[in-house]
Amino acid sequence: MGLWSHLNVRRIECPKCHTISDHCVQFFFGGCNDDHLEIGHTLSWGPDGRGEPGHRLVVTDGLGSPCPGCGGPHAPPAVHTPNQFDIFIENDVITHARWATGEFDYDTKDEPDPESDYLVLDDYPPSVTR
Ligand SMILES: [Zn+2]
Image (cartoon, rainbow, N blue to C red; front, side, top):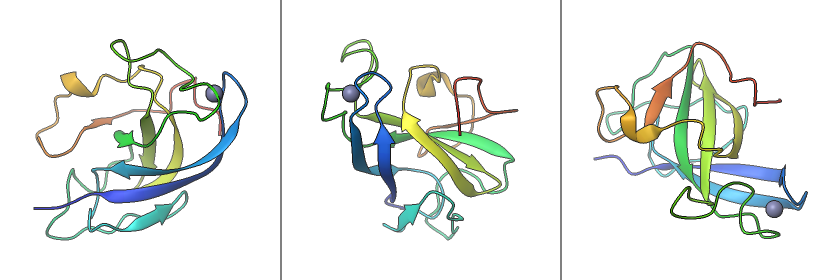
């Protein structure tokens, strides 16, 4: 059984209050050997991996912390969890992370791995600016 991986999200700017903060975001895709990764790193895969390697583009659910300035840039709890992140992975390379906008519904996913919340995408959504 895999654990999870951590992504260091550095100096992310809140789209609402413009506070800049660092976050350690847990996610459940790739090798999940308690590794600490950065944007630009390639996922390792092993026997405990979650999800599936080799997709051109996926977005996966991350658990970090809310914005320290405003408590979260998007909708509050009940509607949306303010410490949730979207992590984008292109060809197994982590390319982008942001506070989840609620745009992706990880609960209605159709992928086969119940241990991993991710969605396969054709392209980045227009809301992602990199
Ligand atoms: Zn904020």
